[in-house]
Every structure is written in C-alpha cells, then in structure tokens.
Length: 136
Length: 404
Image 1: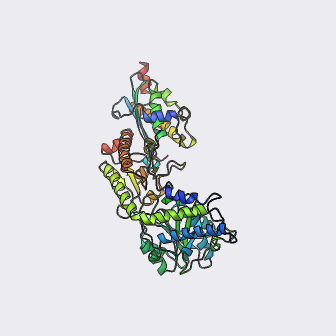
Image 2: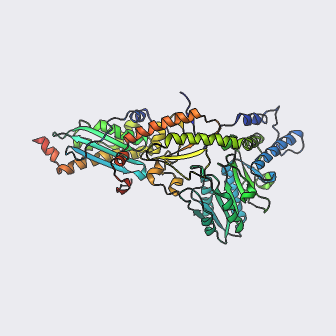
Image 3: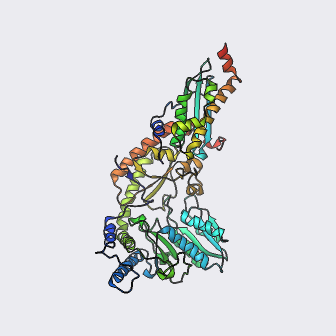
C-alpha cells in the first residue's frame, strides 16, 4: 500500500508522543479502539483555566494511518477551546492525510478520541465548568 | 534506493540461474520449442522427451512413478483438480469432505465452492502447536467421506504435519488423502509410498522454479480417478487438457532435480540462519514464536511482537521484504485466520510477522534484519498505549474494549 507523504511524515516523526497524569484535574483522557481490531488510541489534553487546550499527547497502537491521524490531531487541538476541538471532523483528518477508503476508520477513531478526552475532562469538572471558569 | 533484503521466500523465490538456463533453451527457433503433443516430427519428439525427463525429476523427489505426475499451472490448480476432481467423480459414494481451518485459501475456497454444490465439509481445528491430530481426523471420518485434504507444511507458520500418521488413518478407512505440499517439496523429505498419500500438489516457484507451473501427483495403485476440470485435447491422460508448456515444465524439473541433490546441505544452512535470527530476537520482551518449535521447516519463521501492530511494523521495516502474518494489509482488517485457529489472542495475531529465508539469504542479511527489527519494535512500543499499560502492570485482557 502506498502511503501519502503526510502520513509518512507523521509516522516517521510523530508529534506529541507521550503520557500525562490521568488524575491531574487539568487533564482529560480519551482511549478508544480495541486490540482485537488492531487499533487503540489514547489521546490526552491539558486544559488551562481559560478553557484552552494547552498541550496534547498521544500514544497509538495501530497501523501507520492510525498513528498519523492521532499525531495530526494533537497538533490541531493545541491552542483551541474544547468546543473548537470537539468540532473537528474525521473527514478533515482524512482529507489532510489523503487516507484511502480502507483507512477512513483511522480518522474516525481519532475524532472519537478527542471527543472522549473532552468528555472525560468535562466529567471531572461537571458539565460546563471550564466555560464558567473562563467567564470569571 | 537500495533494494530491500528479501525475506519472503514462502511467498515466492527467484528462479535459480541453472533453471533459467534450461528454460531459455526451450523457447526460440534454434531451441527445443516444439509442441510435445506433435507426434509427426522431430520438434515434437524432442519436446516430449524433455517433458518426460522433467516428469521423472519431479517424481524422483517424492518417490513416485513418473506416470503419476500431472502437469498443472501451479499448486492452486492442483488443489482444485484434486479436491473437485475426486469429490465429483466419487459423489455417488458420498459427498463429505474433510479439511482443516488452517489450509491455504486454494483448498478452503475450493471446499466452499463444493459446499455451494451440495457437498458437506468438516473443517478440523488444529492444536495450539498447529498440528492436525490423527485422532481428530479419525473421529471426523464418516461413511460418506470421500476425500481428506490437509497441508504438509503450513505457509504462515511453517509447522509440519505428521502426514504418515494422517495417511494411515485415511488408508485404513479407504478415504482418499490429498496433501498440499507447496511449502514442503524440496524442503523436507517426501515419500508418497511411505506416507500413504493419494494426491499431492506441488508448485515450481516455491523452490526456485518458474511461476505459473505446478504438478499433481495422482496415485495409480490403488488407483485414484478424478473428474477433469479443464477439458480439451485430452492431454495428461485426460486429467488436464492444454498444450504443455515445455520451458515451464523443464524449469520445474530442473528445480526439483537441484532440490533433491542439494536439499540436505541447504536445510543445514537455512537452519543456522533461522537460529541466528532467533538468537538475535529472543532476548526481547514479549516476543513469541507462533507454532511448534520442534516440528517445523527452518525456512518459515512466524513471530509475534506483543503490543506492536503488524502493519505498522512492516511499514517501519521498509528495508526488509517480509509479510505480516496478519491480513491487515488487505481491506478485511482481520487478523490471520491461521493464528486465530491456533488460539492466539487478537493482540498477538495482529502483531505477527512472517520471515522466510532461502537459497540466497546471507548471514549479513539476517544481522541487518535483527538490527532493524529491534529498532522498529522499540520505536513502536514507545508509541503504544498497550505497551504502557503492560509496563504499568495493567492486564489488557481485563479491560472491556469497545469493538469498532
């Protein structure tokens, strides 16, 4: 299978690989996928008091497209609000990386991962807390 | 770009220069280009002679009579001819077939086709070592069973079945026994008399012969009859019509001759390469050999690197020509059906690589491969959340994953 240059770039030089303390109140963690399906993504975001995603880290078990999708996503979410990050669509990721049809599920997984991380963060703070904090 | 190191000999092999030389002598006007079926002139007689020499060379490797060798286009066609041919010819006796879950697709898909035609097929489970047990086979044989089809050496894991023991079960129950020997011919000794095999499939390109060429052994005593699948001029005693491809046949014959002569020396060398490879990998954490360690051909070696996904591993090993034991590179995204049938869990089935070495593999190739593999696995484990969890002592099988 031929991979696009962008997939190869993210695969060879993955951005923001790492792990944050999942218990930190500023951190939201999303883990999606399943080993049985050959893909597991863990995406973590660190949200500051203004409700902005300051930092993002990922680790992914999966094919090159899955690794590239999650690497790209960490770049995209940094500096965004939770609502902005939550509105990123898998089609944007698939388009940016020129994923072939059999690899679209990798971009879907990445979208699921950021949504799960945001949900985890919001659950820690009660719905809308970050927004309220930002308004103070 | 430097060519990758070829470690995929189980997929195919380059043609041996001695084979290519013989083949090239059967193509052009000044060579042996005649139609072996032409009875009225020298061109035909010489081509026929070359074909019959090759037939003997193939027969000699497996202790068969040359009259028991039928030329085909490859092991896939041989499997089709053997299973469909026997099942159809003997269908008034019964319509039950036995095979296993880890056969090559050429056998499995042929059986599926026959199921659609009203035949019934039993798919035996292998043990976790990859063997088919004679006891399980015996228990599956019924009054209406006409043919059993099992492979000699598995193409993904290299495990060798005990064909003699399985053959004795079939003979005792008067059921025909077909064996796909595409991966074993020229690698380990085959004696169709001793093994009590009735039909056996061969491929030329797995042992340094040309692609598009194969043969089927069809026993004469006790006689096996089969329904032809290719109709026409009645070549090959009516079992497989079509003009014989002299150059291909001569190439297969020469490849089999060389194998018979050099097999034992070559096996020793390949065994030492395999040992070198495993010595270079076995001290890594969470690395598993798939299939029995004791009963295998040395050329095929299937390893799972836990917590690393096979397709991405192959991607980072672009300097090595290898194949994923898993079929992830296809659209199906399913892990290897062979490893699943062995009872390997999904993570390990998704994490497997098949290395197959052969005649032109060097020690330097192996050393380079070890270095690249170690680097790639370390890099991908750094990226793997499953590796993190393993290192933190989390039991991955205890987590409820949402299948997607």
